[in-house]
Length: 101
Image 1: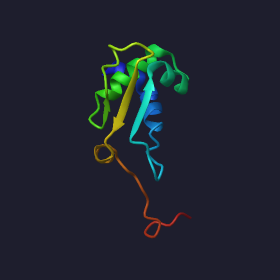
Image 2: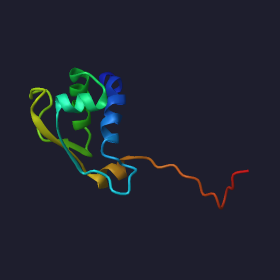
Image 3: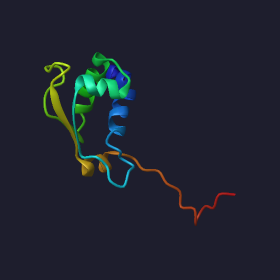
Image 4: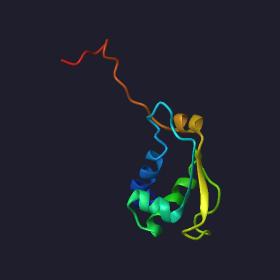
């Protein structure tokens, strides 16, 4: 649990690559560990650990075990948007009921 929290910021950076708030979010990324680390501005070991943590979630899958492949191995990360939506908490305001002063 503790190491998952350590890598959570990088996990969130990976999730943002899927553009979850975009009208046309990304379903799949094909990348290598080295390319993903470069895109995130993180080192390869941190990216690998974050990817391992992400793969433990029910809404994301990785086509290979991040701990087993080289930094140049090309793999896929996929998101199940239905599971993603069910596992997130959405907070909103009804501005008609509670107008902002």
